[in-house]
Image (cartoon, rainbow, N blue to C red; front, side, top):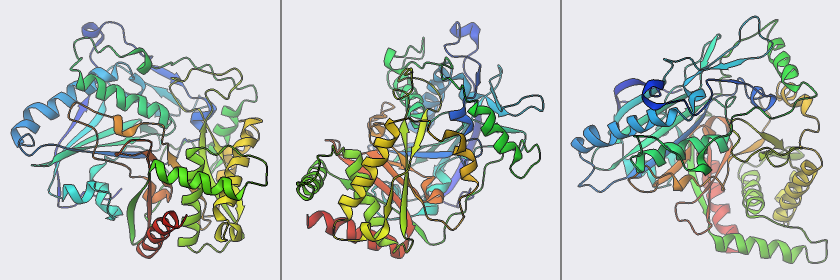
Length: 459
């Protein structure tokens, strides 16, 4: 994690706890949760970092407002939200007498909340123009982890005087996936916006399902735990995150597919597939396929085959299915593979769409096919191997996260600059548009931007 630059001043680092049971009645969530194999899979992955920018009218964005209204309200609503998400205030440990890592919340556990002030250019950071990758780092908090214990979540509120504020999150992937993270953030926003702190009631659609109903007859949780314990072992129970270095000279860029762009891509694909079997082409597939082609061209990838990885929600794909509001991880990796020369060719979009569609179709036959190797395969990936991945989803509705001062001006997944993933989100413009975010070196980013715009114009 980069240290905060001189443009960001830490005002306070406080600890926020859920309200005591005596003041709020019975807790609405369990204090401890067993980790499933879906969770353990991500045990030592670096935290997922998200960042929301909120613009405010100059008349409101005063020091008095920030100090006496905004920050206290965000703090108070966070505390009341945590009673519905107690595990997020807990810690991961791996006791010597436990076969698997353990997630526990003990009364008195807290979430770290950093309050900071930034002198950086708010509008530069939140407009979607090219931004140096390191410029976002001071706006997201560090998630504490040691060999023996790892925090689950850390948060940061950064005030930009006379402009607005940002909320940065760092969340442990071994506790919850993107869907569960979105439930938490929207619950916090709901309680804050509606000033519903007296009883902190959440709408039914926001309430979490905590029962560990995921079945594991193949004992995948034990297999994954043993894989981690034997890695750099023996009996390696470290909970330290794997460090991933930021590639030098990286810049970030955000690009939008309008609904019209998606429809144009769909019609272009269908026209080229007219004589072949019909294929259902989703908005997700088209956006990922087009972006995949542009990245392969921009980076001038030389490998014979190109791979893409994205996660699929398994909640409704399991047998039996589990509730959509299940709290935790429940995602499986989907890995399309295509000939690089095909992606670089005239019909690159068709090649990419077909590869993604075929990979999704394979997943339908069994989401846990080959799951016993999910962790061990990670250890075989070469550090110099370029595997493009997708982070996030256009279905999460990130731009609906309104804490009471309007929709976000900008949403970013900060951690993609180290994982070199493509972030996917709904768009601030709404109307079915999609945003993709990337972190590439400066030369590749400019090539990508040109390819992305030119390709859509020429369809």
